Length: 150
Image (cartoon, rainbow, N blue to C red; front, side, top):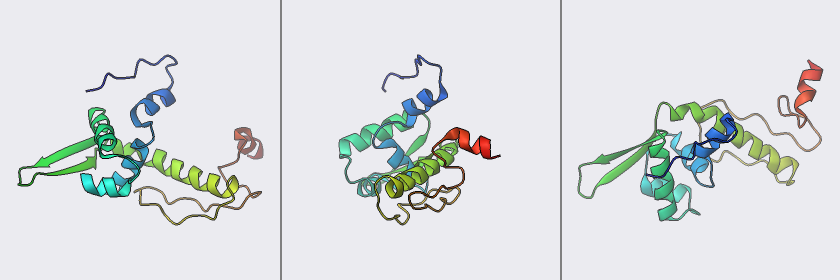
C-alpha cells in the first residue's frame, strides 16, 4: 500500500479530496464506475489512454482509500469486478460538477461545440451549457456576482 499523503499542510478539505481522487485517471475511473460495476478490461476500454499498469495502480489506491471495492470471483479464469463504495458514491456531485465545468470550458474557452454525454453519473443531470458571453445561473466567473445579484 502507498503511504498516505494526508499529512496536510493547510488543513484544507480540498487538499484532502485531491489526495484521494486527484490525478489524471482516478476521476475518470470513478466517473465510469458510478454507472455500475465494471471489470478491469471494461475500464481499460473506457480509459484507453491509461496503461494497464497505471490503471491497476490507480484502482489499488482508490481501493486502499475506501472509495472502490474489488471483488474476485472464484472462477477459472478469475473474474474481478470493481465498484464504488457507498462512501465513494458521495463523490457523485463532485464528479458531476467537474463534468459540467469541463463542458462549459470547452464551449466558452475553447470555442468547441457542446458534447453529448461522456458517460453516466448517477446524479443530477448536467446544466445546459451556454455559448460564450451568456452567463449560466450558478456558474458565474465571479463568485461575488451571485451574492450581489441576490
